[in-house]
Amino acid sequence: MIPQSSSDDAPLVWVEELCGITEKLFRKEVGLLEVSDGARMIDLPIVDRRRIFDDTTGGLFALAETRLAPAGHPAAAIAARLAAPLQESAPRLPILHTDGIFAALVKHRAKAVIRGAGLSPEMTAAVERLPLQLVPRGAAKVSDGIPDGTVRVISPDGSVKSVSDPADLWKELNLSGKTP
Image (tube, rainbow, N blue to C red; front, side, top):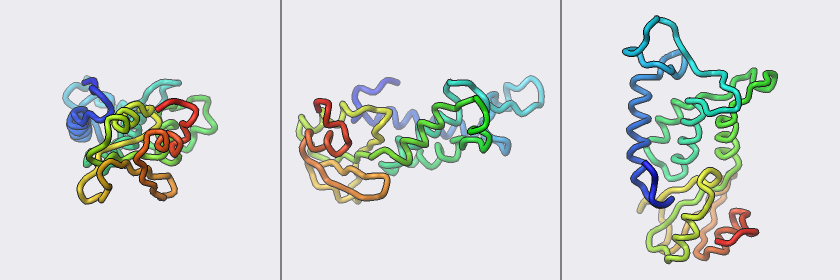
């Protein structure tokens, strides 16, 4: 499912279903299985732990969790359980789980954007043009208390800033060299 824009919430339904199915069929004590119990030909735990410079199942769920968590989406908790942490041996091995590393960087270093209701067309366009992989985002809930026409930018340290101008948003996200 391809979102029409980064404000399109339809893919979140798909992610929630995917997380639920994966947790039910592919999560065991040994980690994420690459083959479900019903499709397994032999009784060996097949776990994806060593792909070179490629996406891993656990890393993809780690990326999903980093994108869903700022908005408090319920699927974020499931994705977090499915995310495979970096192995302790990763610094010593010449094998990199690039998606897991990228997810960790976004989770601990990126600023998140929560969009309030009633954004101007210019502000909506600016939010939709933010880099999808670098800026976790989501729609505000009523309980978030975000004023109409603004977005909330949450820094990794927990500090919060409200922004209502596209140029200020891009500046706050350190994207000032680009056009909103």
